[in-house]
Length: 145
Image (tube, rainbow, N blue to C red):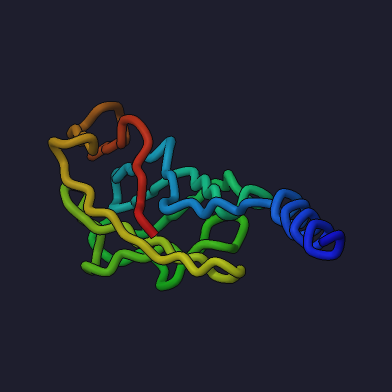
């Protein structure tokens, strides 16, 4: 009887001592904007926060390219841990798909979101001198992974 009670007590205390790891189901994208300037220059900025990888996020993600062409294939966020892709081809700010993929780590992540002008993704022409088109996402974009 003592052995059984001790075994149950040991098993119960081990269960309570084990940390419960709660996996996040999305990557959060905030401070998200894109801008096309004179001379076909384009830039995009956003911040990635990932509950599965709190030690290396939030991280900034910045892109520069010629508007009307595709940004660098397999561009990465500033910490090097997230690929940034546009699977539908060259980025048209009015509608495009943003794809993020975790480069390494024990929890594989890959997800995408469609951004479309007139939703939470809002675009405007000539908002300031030197900027031909400016778009921004208002709020936090959750990309399911």
